[in-house]
Length: 449
Image (tube, rainbow, N blue to C red; front, side):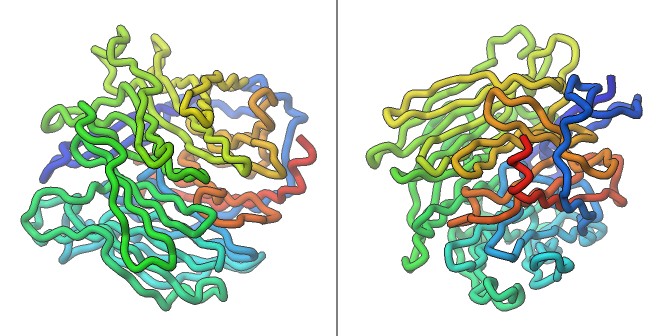
């Protein structure tokens, strides 16, 4: 059976050895298949969608648009959708740094129109996009500050850009400020693995792990400066790639262990943590710990995170993966967690008809939870935790295995007639000709599930 291996390709986090997380390696054997190959009834299709190729990065390595699966990469305001594309042709001149940055270009699409390219922002990694209730686009950027050509762009400052006229489609005019600075030659002050979210009151949240701490910054749109907090300190492991969400009580973070063990060696992903600010104080708890599993001695990656989501009635939902199939290391099982108001976690397995699903994301429509599920050549939707997989009818594709959504975590007062999706190609073998996709599904189609 054909499948996808979400293999991590690693180099060291320092200097010439750079961590490339979760590059997708595709199986050589490929069968022409249909949805019923995965025990999904052939008659179960969701149709009437927009499916179009979009611009992408030239190179897979270092900082392509697909990288950073925890990030917010597509947002909507009324009839406008925004995304960012990393142009990294600069890599022919060496690592991205202050003298050789890559560029994050902002794109906007209005209704059925074409994507329009706007301002370019210097960066060394993909960016997070958020949009507030006024339609003002916010972009969270990691800007390299080092000029040493042997530094790989992982040392830099955290910046906030905003586009005052984005609600009218102007994606050229912008302002910016520094959230956390970094001086040349200093130790790391900002980690490249950045997550973000925006609250219903237009408060921006930005988080990253650094060493064995997890930090979060926040700023309400009317405030002059950012506040800094520690969600957790001296955790015993590094916890990176934070998913960020916010409830009426405050923010929460889902992060994965990401322990550096030596030059050229793969980092360790065996457990995760959920961080929650409850009654003004941060708490954290481990959701899964496979560090003592028999496979831990031979596999660096046994756990990962997929999603963190807050519903309209303030339910915190998360999804994590475990990779403990004894034979196939890329096959995952999925667990949903729900955090109750007392901080207790309820665990529920997510049962799927396909064992080739790579990622799962959440949307909500009219109070109903739906799960978007991606495999190497199919896109599915699932209504509720007990609903069957329904295949979303798309043209044939064999890429786009990183899935990003516009939802309530990145778009305030999201009240759209569409579900907006990016499918970004993480398969190294497809570059420099990798194809990425934008998918738009009318929410009216959800009635057919």
